[in-house]
Length: 70
Image 1: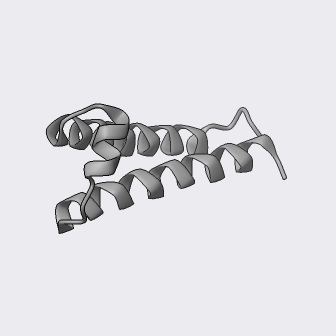
Image 2 (image 1 turned 90 degrees about the horizontal axis):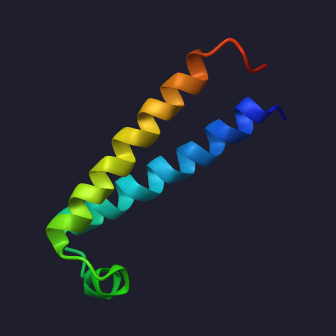
């Protein structure tokens, strides 16, 4: 397995995890335990989750389209 494939798998897991947490929060899943663990408000957590989703998508695109790594 090449380093490119490993990086893509890790970024896929980050993307899936962040997207799942955002969707659970929108669906009304009780997330008070997670908010107290991170010591943030719901709005801050949602913005951070959106940042993680877009950042991981940009990195996935950058790695997948690069020709430098095999």
